[in-house]
Amino acid sequence: MDVKAGLIDFLRNEVLEDASFEINEQDQLLSEGIIDSLGLMRTIRFIEKAYDISISFEDITLENFNSIISIQDYINKVIN
Image (cartoon, rainbow, N blue to C red; front, side, top):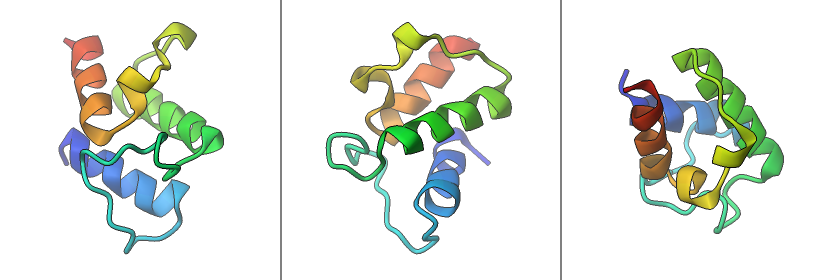
């Protein structure tokens, strides 16, 4: 499973608890209220476990975590 598909699957099933919820890779997850701060923290924990990385507090920004695309870009930057 690629990064985008894994994130969308996690958000639908674990954060939103609605597998049918449509999430576009460019949706503004935080700005549009799709996920809240607790959902963000759950997503960060998922990413840390799934990719064996540690996300610093300073990296938790809208720029890095507001959309599936920005999260994917952040993960790729950290693991490469």
